[in-house]
Image (cartoon, rainbow over all chains, first blue to last red; front, side, top):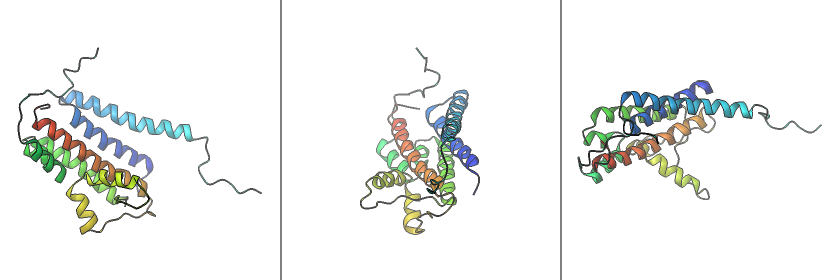
Length: 64
Length: 136
């Protein structure tokens, strides 16, 4: 399986291309829309990951 | 105020086809509604995009939703997944595809499969708007 970051980028690419084609008709507007969606998804994912960084990633450690 | 005249799809105001037929075709297969309405290049692009999401979801062995008793949200998710049309029924009933919960890409694959269905539902609405002349 590819890594998480690659899959996140692939997802953002697919969704960005879809909405750019669906909502815009001019090529310049489509590129702008694609970049907005792509950066929003990838950037939002990275920000969410950064915010969750302090939280433990695994199950709670057993009580001694 | 933002000027949207350059960004919003122009509306011709003229119906270009049968809206009901366009919706049914769009729901049956991704891009078919746009193809019927004469937007052939766009139809191919939409088909490729939805197919990419679908193939990636299956490759990652994601969950193809089906209704489960006691879990009402699975009904909504099933409706969303069924939005991809014929490919959903081929996967579910011909290929007997269910997904593999233990696969490493299971959650990602589920998101890709659900997104494919939801995108095609939006394509159906877009086909309606084009057929009724609200969009070009």
